[in-house]
Amino acid sequence: MTTAADFRRRELGAFLRAIREHVDPADFGVVTTGRRRTPGLRREEVAAASGVGLAWYTWLEQGRVQTSREVLEALARTLRMARDERRHLLALGGYVADDAAEDDGAVEWLRPMLDSWPLTPALVLNRRYDVLAGNAAYAAVWPEPALSGRPNLLLTLASSHRLEEMLVPEERFLYELFLRFRVRADRYPDDSGVMERLRELRPDLDHWWSCRAVREFGSWPVTVLSGGHRLRFTCSLLQPDDSTTVLVQAPADVETRRWVELRSSA
Image 1 (cartoon, rainbow, N blue to C red):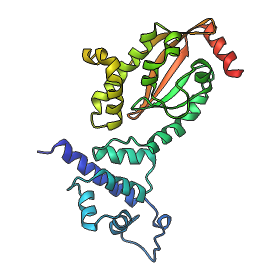
Image 2 (image 1 turned 90 degrees about the vertical axis):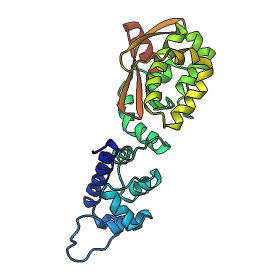
Image 3 (image 1 turned 120 degrees about the vertical axis):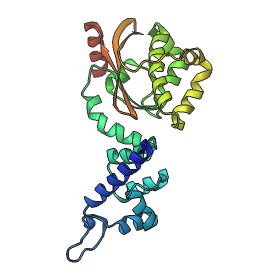
Image 4 (image 1 turned 60 degrees about the vertical axis):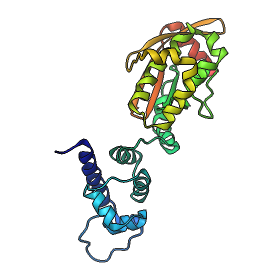
């Protein structure tokens, strides 16, 4: 009987073979003379460049063996895989792509979208809800978390007295985010970064965790007090992939839109 693990191993092997056969050997410094029987790189060329044995690599492409994250990372580097290809390779191997390079790649491809929302505060978060980037509208409305140093949004909301005074009611924003974070934490128990953030949050938010409430989709309202103004936003979380979240805060009335526009252009 074919198991899910068997299926993933076969898919991983087929994926490696497809990538290997579609690369140009000249791009990898391989000098070719005459016609090669194998399109792209040969197995022995990939194995040697990745520091693994030819027999082991052959078995990997045949879906006969499971391998470590380190080997998959080496193969991804050897084959110069793009971000999405590397993430797919790791997922087929049963690993979560959660390193700094992954975060940087998310910011790079989402930055144009953030900057196209001049009146809508928005943040890019990773799976741990660390703040990776934000736009000018966010900086105009929110004093923290800062857009540098990659602070954690949940930890900041749970500990900031300034934000506590700005938010009406102060717990709603944090609670809605926590419900969605709980979904991620339950689905990725092997992600050490997620579990580390959870341990940091648990002392203050244990009552929320114990009730096991979750929410994955849907928007919620938030009111922010700033400079004597009551700003109203509708918040939503977008998930362009399984490791990245975009927090969008759309102005809910004309007064809020005008205020954000004035502050963003100041």
